Amino acid sequence: MAFARLEKPCDVVVVGAGWAGLSAAFHLSRRGYRVTVLEKTRKGGGRTYSFEDRQRGEQLDNGEHVLLGLCSHFRYLLREAGLESTVRFQPLLDVPVVSSSGRSSLGSKKLPGSLHLAGSVLRYGPLDPMERIKALLAGLAIQLNGPADSLDGISFAEWLKRHGQSRDAISLFWEAIGTGILNARANEVSASLAIKTFSLLLKQGWKGARLGLFVRPLSEITQEFQSFLKSQGVAFRFESPVNALDIGDSGVVTAMGPDSKASASAAILALPPDQLRRLVDNSALDSMLVLPDFDFSPILNVYLFYDRTVFERDITLLPDDFGAMVFNRTRLLSSSSIGRTTLVVSISAARELRNLPMADLSRMVEKKVRDRLRLPKAESCRSVWQPHATFLATPGSEHLRPDNETNISGLFLAGDWTRTGWPACLEGAVLSGQNAANATISASHGKRLSIPNET
Figure: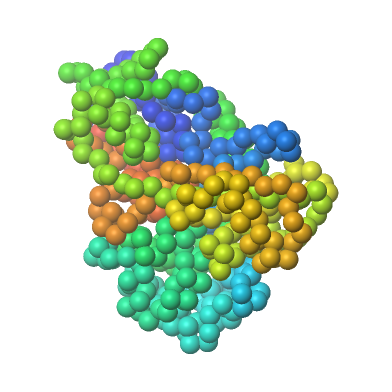
């Protein structure tokens, strides 16, 4: 599927300035391609952005995002743009856990392979001794067998039950770890994807399992990365929605919006699947490009505001309370006001909470966190929904995730929902952008891109 390198205003147009599109633009520009990025909003970042809470005078993120040490592709982009300091990595994985059984933790030791987690599992308070041993045995099965595409047809919960995991073990251990990464409960996510994810966590060792916590608002990081791309020759057009595509006889792809259009010898569509489907339908390409019909999984973030210091930890996991992760934004962001505390309660796979009134929801979450962590009542709360936070990787969905190269000459896909081998996350997004750039370059007789696989 080769296409000509035409003398056009740009070689490749990227539709969407989320991290998948930014990654594609980065890798293409590094190889000398002229790239134009079209974005319908006023700023990039896609589903990772910040907004101002005027009442508090703070920059809040629409969702709390975390990296792992094994997220080598995202770390590479930050390093190349001089933005490494925007993420602070733990020396070793260390997640305090507060449950109905008391205080515990999940953490690593500097031991090879999956041994780095073994001691923590054997001391994990929410499970009884036999459940801990069985959890280790299930982890060993994941490590020895590795990912298996044949398991895509069953849920992760079903696989765990086959390997002797109790209801409490699934809820308080496997989901406590996995739900925040997969944005799905064990009974609704593909066993194949879940096992791939846990296999990465185990085999990458203690360096790969470390948490990386953002210390700057997400939009600031995105804007600085966009500025870096501009210095590399990437052109951006914001507030430029693309409503339709035209594939010319000569292979030129034209992206058309209400007030403008951009033509290139190739296009990378870095859009969520629902937005991409509308674009494909509007372009009369639906018979040529078949897209999966994914469901979405929401994430709820509840901000709790205090006018004094109330909490001394960076993060804490509450496995009994929706598997919520509590982030101390005041400690993480150096720009936060002294003498106040802002906590973020992040609840992944929050579909069961979606129909509750917002005010009731905020009060319920605040009370659960207050009671569990023995905090004073928050001065105020603010809930932020991400109804389409990620696609839902249900059993049978892994084989539906499309490749980056389509059967339409000059047209490529990027997004964390494509076939990356990762769940929907920042690492999956930037990996998909690199894969789309690779496919574009290969189609124009170039060479594949690669980066050091560092943790």
